[in-house]
Image (cartoon, rainbow, N blue to C red; front, side):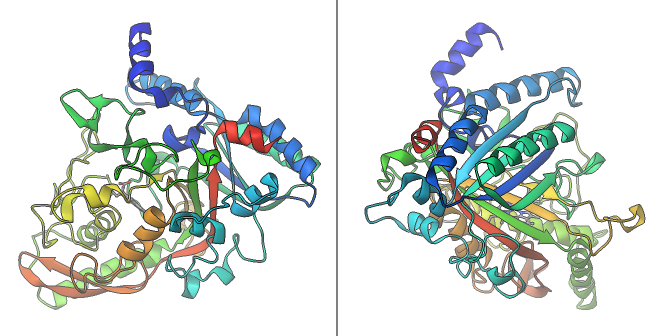
Length: 487
Ligand code: HEM
């Protein structure tokens, strides 16, 4: 970037230069290796404040992460799409649960009556399990972390381009925590999948395609300023949807205490994926369509049905634009994200139950984006475990642990994450009666597959093969708030 461009960006995109907002929220660490450490505080306040004071200089800010990511993208472009090995960084962010904040403040963090989103945070994910549909095999009593009997006070997110550097950093953090009397109650490692699978989740689909753009952080396209430059379809939303204390889409945000400004609410969730079972049921559902004589376009197999469950093909190409077959990938082409559902009101192309339509119905509610835009979240998840590939040996078989470390940031837990889970993902009557739950992440369901050739729909059973194994609600405060918490 030339000096002139940098000056221009600083003026027009002030959030890129924030030294107050933590770096994973708006810029995103986007690393191949990540470790999440869940910490419990000891009874003594002074050593915990000391620990925090020493940690603060190591916390990555938006300015640092955004500058690194910009340099990385430029270098990648010059290297014709390969990763610039010489450029690497290791980042750390910290967030606090309600119990952790209460302890560090030594008083009630939210003294006034608070909106639902704050109540969700105060009660925590264990108490909100029912709202999120966490029952049966996902019931919170079975969780690996976040159970009522396992208090978590702080969450450290450590991420690096380099596995060895990540381990060094994580062990320094473990030592510093232990010295201050903190206990690591759970540690979750994550890594992008190897080789061609990089950037894809365990079922095989490209992930992280559709994210919201953020005003004053992302550069608008000069010819189409509602979208991010170079990312058609990535709508630019006010920063207050993700960072507390900034303007929101619907005007004034509910007043929260001043210390929350420039912070963001965080959901950390371990979602186990049973890959062979999910694909086996997609295959069975596809065969059922044949048995029942439903007319389908020629050459459509299990992949065709699985793409309808997600709303995208494995490559990330949308079903909306490529209804019947996965198109060849075009190197360098922008992600296929300029999607509208207005011309598909009955869901004959992208079904109403499709994961991407459930979690972001776009203009498919009332013909415009207003409703869906207030439910967006910034996703920073990363897979854990080895890919399913039984021939590759230990760790790759059907019983090995694998899934998604789901991490998301938002300004309101109730209006955003919990609403998605409750009102859309696990609502069988989403958009129309008997649509079914989300067949990727929702509870056991019959989805109603409607097609031009079968407009009344065909019910197909999808059992739940994504299981919640732990959830924590936390808050990633601004650097200035962290400093005052450290005393
Ligand atoms: C193991 C669990 C999950 C898997 C395998 C999964 C998979 C995917 C895939 C393949 C995509 C399409 C690519 C993309 O746009 O990034 C996607 C998009 C998305 N997912 Fe998930 N996801 C999971 C959990 C969740 C959860 C728990 C939520 C929130 C409740 C969520 C919300 C979203 C959203 C908002 C999008 C973007 C939709 C759009 O804007 O078009 N996902 N997910």
